[in-house]
Image (tube, rainbow, N blue to C red; front, side, top):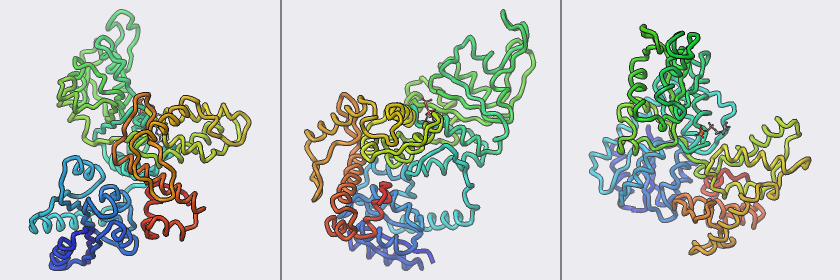
Length: 472
Ligand SMILES: Nc1ncnc2c1ncn2[C@@H]1O[C@H](COP(=O)(O)OP(=O)(O)OP(=O)(O)O)[C@@H](O)[C@H]1O
């Protein structure tokens, strides 16, 4: 029998839900706080969680990744008294099944619950997700794991994929990973830099030309589109494509046929399309600088890669991976990293994302010379200065109330000369992590003391440790 958990501090809501769910012949349990809810999820398996947002001991949306990662991997339905569009957007991006606002008609709740249970049943029957080959792709944060799920989906079909994300977030790496895990893995992977294409060279680069087509065409040349036959065509920086060229793209993407310059015959190419951009194509469509029909054609599967500053859990594994790789390439034994280095890396803003992190660590390895350990001193001074400045700026900001037994907390994640204010959610999450780190340091990892000082239950404590990727 399916089991449902309702996490809501309103006893009346809990009772109504309990009676409704029991009448549907399902098992229902209630929890009035987040802590209780997380404990229940650790102790037993649930199929669905109805989650309130404003709970006495925290924000339900903040706990969403932990709840979804609970052993039974439940589906989550938000049931909130104060619906707000931003919260709904965040929740849906976080993978919730539905976002309901109280009071919600009983009929709606039953319908949603029946649908989600049917979906879960079907999901259980489906074959397990394919085992991805993620060689050279590092990431263990919940957001990255969600990206890997999309990679698996994309690898199992032949649909067009649009990868978005800031520079250096790994768009090309993910495009290559999709290709390497797809049925076309034995075919070629052909990247096209759309930013370098102009009207004069577009056709000849993409479609090729025949001998004598224009001055200097002294032999036939196969274009990139034909080279991608049986493999993947990767259109990088698609947002840079001039509007005047977008129509040509749309045509050959729709028909997969084209005519080499100077040739009167149409040719075909059987390729899978992956495109990438760091531009906001939706806004460009609104401003008429990107064709809507092309945008829709590209984004059959949309894979948005989050910036590094939003997945700090990945910084440590990435740093260890890069240090290992760099030392290997330089023929040196691998170096250790001092704990202080991670603290700095986690507070930096990483505008250049993973690429900037890798470059920074390469500089640090060089600076460390023959030493066995990389210390904070070996990081580039500009990075250390920015982090220290931001900590000082953070102190002059109205300080959030310090949890007992912790130092005044720095303002995290800022590295601009002009102060950057992170999203409240990001700020809170940083505070929570710093709090746990201080707690562990102060109590020398004495679990009893930590639980007593923090007032956390054992399971909530472990859930938070897991959420922030802290090693105990
Ligand atoms: N998750 C990851 N694990 C390991 N390496 C990564 C990861 N993400 C990115 N990298 C590395 O970071 C560098 C930049 O990645 P990539 O070129 O794919 O980024 P991009 O988003 O395509 O950048 P741009 O928009 O500037 O073209 C590469 O060396 C890539 O291997």
